[in-house]
Length: 87
Image: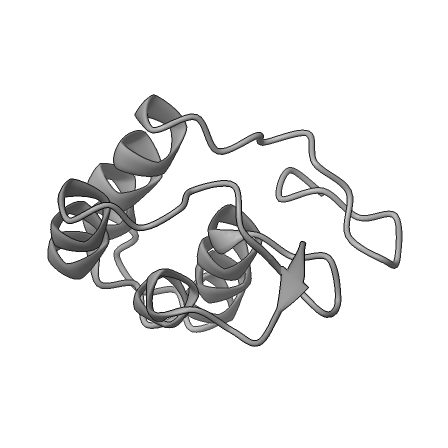
């Protein structure tokens, strides 16, 4: 069900892979979506786009992405704008 942004979404938006792994380990719901229909992977993708624009190193996002995918986050889930984390 839709809810405000969760701590997991906040960690993903901040690109904090360690916090993502910690929150998942403590039981954070990887399938939760906010009122816009975005899951944590959507937020991590937004962070990736922002730092890509800055030509920064993005490898630090990979562990967070792997943790979210391993926990069952759907990379094909669509938000209210019909966007997935992949596009």
